[in-house]
Length: 230
Image (cartoon, rainbow, N blue to C red; front, side):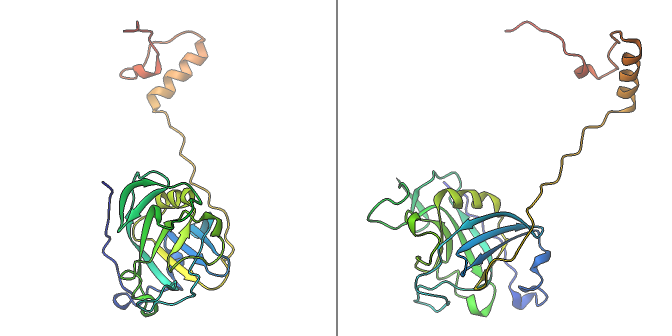
C-alpha cells in the first residue's frame, strides 16, 4: 500500500572523511536540537523550515532496552506512509485503517508518517534496531518539550510536510546544543522562456507593420485559432 524504500547506507567506518563536521557540504540535512526541542531542515546550508518536536522524556542515549533518544549523526533509512491520511494510525509500520484527531484521549500510537533513522556512529549504532523514528503523535499538546519514548515526535501536519521535503539518505544530526543560525532558503528562479531567431524575426516584423503576419513555419502555437466546442 505504501512505498518503503531502503537506501544503501554508507557507514562512517567505510567513509572516514564523512562526519558531522563536513556534512554541511551536502544539499539536504536535518538538525534536531534537544535543547530547543526543534527540528530544522536545511538545503544548501539555508533554512527551509523549522518545526517543534519532542525528544525522549527519559533522556539521551542508545542502549538497547532503553527509551532514550540517541544523539549524533544518523541517516534517513526508510520512509513509510506515502499518501496515508493525516492522523493515520500505524502499528508495526502498517496503517491499521484508523485515523485519530490531534490530542485524541487515551492512546498514544505512531501517526501519519514514519521516517526511520539509522545511526552512523558508535554512539547511535542501535538506533535502527531500536526503531528510532521521526513520526507523528496524537499527543500534540506535549510537542515542544521532552515527552517521547525515544523517537522524535512531531505534529501530524508537520511530519506530513517534512516527509515530502526530506529525501531518502538525508543526514540527520541530533544535537544537545541550540539550532545554528541559518539564512532562509531561496528556491532557484525559473529561467524565462527564450524565442528562436525565427520567432524573434516574425514578432519584430509584426510590431513594425502593426498588421497581422502569417505564422512562422511550424509555430502555429503562436496563433490561437477558434474551434467549435464538441
